Image (cartoon, rainbow, N blue to C red; front, side, top):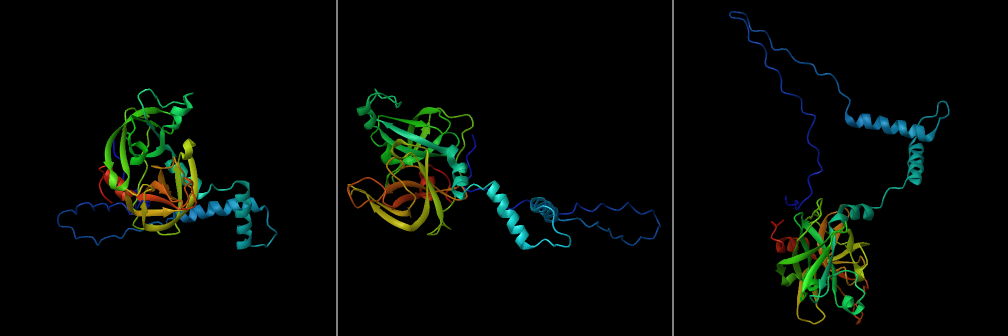
Length: 307
């Protein structure tokens, strides 16, 4: 199994416009005067954008219908055609495209508290309430999953459910307690398991749009949308035993069960692992302040190369 890249591949296309190497001239006959070099003439080639522009123009003309004689195509005509096209077939939102890029990598994480619990939807409601529920994200396609340490801490057994419904037991293979991170390895994985693409938070800025993906209260996968509210934040746990630092603050809704899920940018790349919410009251519900561990720390917990 190959490891997923930490960065997405460059979107810059390979330069396909370089001319082929010039052919070597045939050797001159002995004693013959050297002929002056001949310059090769290149036929003019229409650029790709010109062909694309012609297609768009044709489509617009078809959409606009026959124009009056002598009526030139104006910017207003083009704008009207674009609006009409979008009304017929709206484009998906940026958040929907971001979720589509990461949804196959998001898993549900269940911490089983005794040897008699198999993690399935049991009729024993009391036992079900004792389970620890959270989220994880696949970072290597061999079944390596990042989640929060508090999701699996103290569990007798950990079970994960992949996006396609595949269920598996998982082993704890790494811990980074100072960042509330745990690394799991699933025993059985789907044949086409996809790892999420991660990216550095170096260019992340307050106001950048993000989505949080997870299983709040066991419901999911669920997507919420918001912005980065701040960087380099601190959070002290309810018990006051640990202070997490260098956190990403965000306002996309998160609740118990979102812990361990990915914080994702609009390009579908993971920049953080959701780890905590702040509520000044005693309620464990979201009031607009969530925190995520930067993916640089999370990648290090999984033993992956630094950014």
